[in-house]
Amino acid sequence: MAETALTDHGEPAARAAGWRGIAADWSSDQRAFKNVSWGKAMMWIFLLSDTFIFSCFLLSYMTARMSTTVPWPNPSEVFALNIGGTHIPLILIAIMTFILISSSGTMAMAVNFGYRRDRVKTATLMLVTAAFGATFVGMQAFEWTKLIMEGVRPWENPWGAAQFGSSFFMITGFHGTHVTIGVIFLIAIARKVWRGDFDVERRGFFTSRKGHYEIVEITGLYWHFVDLVWVFIFAFFYLW
Amino acid sequence: MTNVAVDLGAQQPSLHTHKHDAAAVAAAARHAEGQQHPIKLYLVVWGWLFVLSTCSYLVDYFGLHGYLRWSLILLFMVLKAGLIVAVFMHMAWERLALAYAILLPPVLVLVFVAIMVFESEYTHLIRVLFFASPT
Image 1 (cartoon, rainbow over the protein chains, first blue to last red):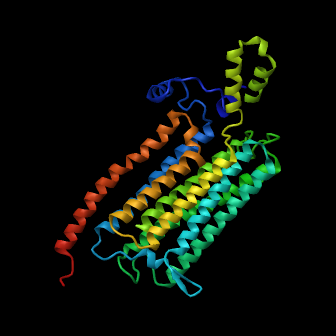
Image 2 (tube, each protein chain N blue to C red):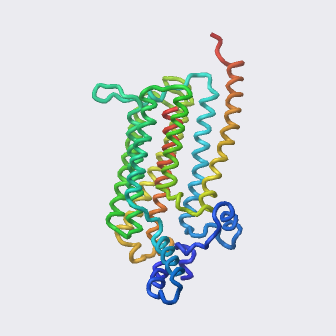
Image 3 (spheres, chains in turn cyan, orange):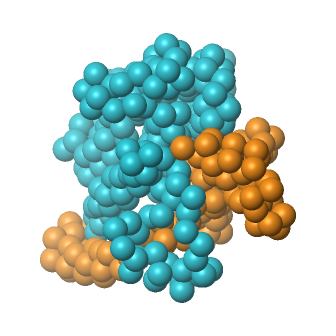
């Protein structure tokens, strides 16, 4: 009991709704987040800090694009592809968007089956999510290769403002790194789910703590965040 | 721990008044297994995300421009982000103390945006005045 008090979903203390409840939670003893485990709270706080990192990237991109006197390359043309003889604008990015959204859908369902203690479905859905993520990174690698072949560098490109390259490589590179880490994270947790670690409460090799199916939701938070960041990158970098 | 709470509530109804017991069991069941929602909800949100993404792609495909383009892009972006955070990340069901702690700080980034808009316009003006190549 004493051990789970901090990590599991305790019965949350009843509070007034709205701001009064928030003030009561925050001014109360020991814990501000009453029914949220430390793992989930820390993942949210990490994601908040990551939000600021990506905000800074997008802001520096905005500043570069707004302050340059050279025309900005048209992303609709830059990321167009010829498929079957037809020229389709931005198609690669659209496909990548749909892949990432699909991965978020499978992840959400994995979390759901995790809480129902359906080991096989949870692990399978997590691996499907990881496969979507790996596909996304693969397409990003293709996109980078194509652009580098066409002469895009962080300091120059054939179509316009030089800052296009640096913004592009910085923003999509950092996002791709997040996706890659997410895929590794997903595979690691899916392995634990598959093995039944959370059913037998096997202790982790590093922390020596018992795992819970909640880790699937925490992994999911990270994964959905990666999708969320892509929503903003898609809107501001590719569509604007 | 929470399963124990459910069992106690279910096996010893005589110890509680009926009203209190029902409330306790309901509360325990709600929190016993974390976030549980029907799969259909996720599928519906998934579908909406597809629709919204298609819409934002079509904005580019049809080559809309100017304020119409920018407002549509922002609209679809905000709707998609809202759906992901509220449903997929379960923020809609979290306690307000957590939701406000996480969701309010990013709003302050808008102040940073405003500062950088002023800064870039100033830089742009200076570049036009002093560095733009005479044509």
